Length: 344
Ligand SMILES: NC(=O)c1ccc[n+]([C@@H]2O[C@H](COP(=O)([O-])OP(=O)(O)OC[C@H]3O[C@@H](n4cnc5c(N)ncnc54)[C@H](O)[C@@H]3O)[C@@H](O)[C@H]2O)c1
Image 1 (spheres, rainbow, N blue to C red):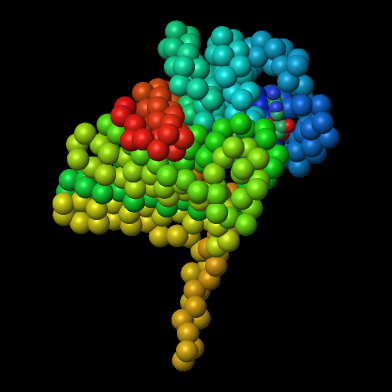
Image 2 (image 1 turned 180 degrees about the horizontal axis):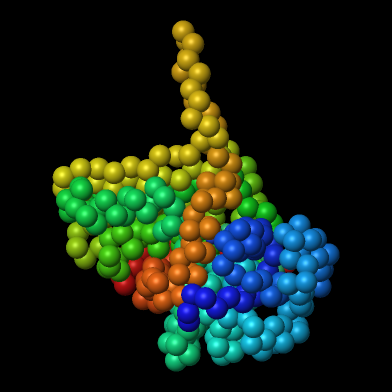
């Protein structure tokens, strides 16, 4: 595709993350937003978003039931999917079949075989299928990756990942049907495997339901805290902790130890202000949500997708790495259930 042709887009799902992508699509100035697609109950919201972003005359609204007309629209080149995870597979397949490039929120699908199916179809259709693992596009995480790859810390030995968030709503857990490893820890799994550069040979996991909101997770046969070890053939060991309910804000940390040094990311705070008195030294609170913490990664990720469509960049999240993350997530869920070390 030449860079001069305007790229027409359809956005499926205008909920939490859909609105983040919509704003970035508008701000990028690189996409013409032809359609917003959601369920009828969201029509009022879609109309309001069209007004807020000054898209009147450019953007139409569609129900999911009649979305085939959106996919048949020749002015639509790309489909961006921000609907609940169980709906991704059907929308991805229909969009690729209609000859569109696809950017889809994580996790791509609920099963490994569905993910493989989607990539096989993308290959046949010669279209890009981009699973939006936004952490790869975060400035700190991306720079850590680049510094390790250029040899700053020698050979990798240990990776430690901590992800703690301030809780999930009942509706989100109900709609998404994916449990902690597939829904939350998949971000960390993808990043770790990308960094290490291979598939772990064995994994094990432990979990607990220990937060004040334990009952909510029990209802969904899930846990609210997991810790896991990923063991790689090249000798690297990775430790992960993912906690759904931490009353401390949104904490995200990665530390990598190599033969020649160590790199750590820093938690991001509401400000860098530090208040010092005779008796205390107080820094500011952590950022509260993923919206704030990863705010800059989302436009970078979107621009990367558009660059890839325009042939300027190779897509960063390959089919193989997306499938590996799904396999590791499934193996960790199995280990959590059985208490066994699972070999991959
Ligand atoms: N990358 C990230 O950091 C990140 C953050 C949040 C969510 N997500 C992912 O994004 C997806 C959506 O999550 P969310 O938190 O925005 O959910 P949400 O519930 O806030 O929004 C989902 C939207 O999709 C709509 N919808 C439901 N079924 C639909 C269908 N069949 N077709 C079209 N629209 C439909 C809903 O009405 C709603 O507007 C999930 O897969 C989730 O894992 C990723």
